[in-house]
Length: 78
Image 1 (cartoon, one colour):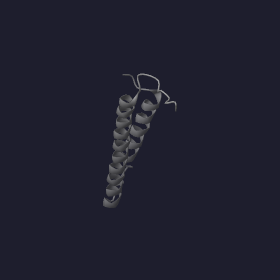
Image 2 (tube, one colour):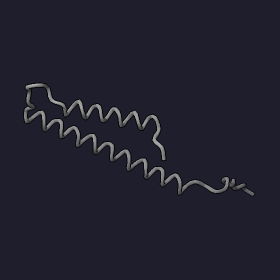
Image 3 (spheres, one colour):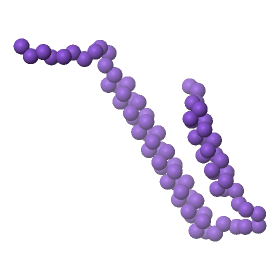
């Protein structure tokens, strides 16, 4: 179960964005509003990722269950 290049790139971008957002500037403090915006954005991103993962898993399960074992047969009218 290896990771594709796209998955590795996605994780790398998310880590870089997270580190950039968390890293504070020297001698500068975040205002409470900024902290709340960052937390709110993180919650929204996590929710979107969760929805996409759940949808992908369900689609994969549904696709495996619907996969026919034999080709479809055509009904010919008499």
